[in-house]
Length: 159
Figure 1 (tube, helix red, strand yellow):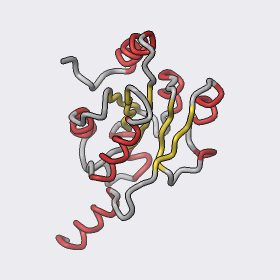
Figure 2: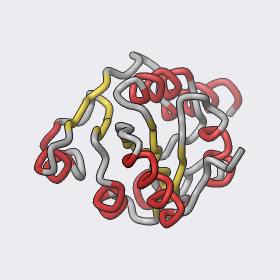
Figure 3: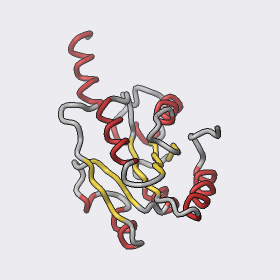
């Protein structure tokens, strides 16, 4: 089986074939640092929105820009490997900027998925996806489950 972790160029090539076969492409993105049950449920719900789930994964450098110098906890190679091991994820591709706008523009997903904590007006790529005839789906997050909360509990217990 070919690797699910692909460059942007390989991803676009593979998506072209899927689209020709009439498959619906779903895109989501994030840091996915310390993968937890909330992430898994979110990704499963995202995958249910179409036929192929593409996960845009923030590179280590972009995670630092978003979360600060103490993150990520898990390297981009390991985060990508864990995401790729999930049955609901079809492709993982890294992006370097804090925002995935360029990747979304290249992928042109049929469905763009983000957590319900994001207002649609703030979702990068939402307007462009909708203008191209796609849809934006906001998925409810698992209450009380987050990487930051997990890190907080570890610090409380062990530091």
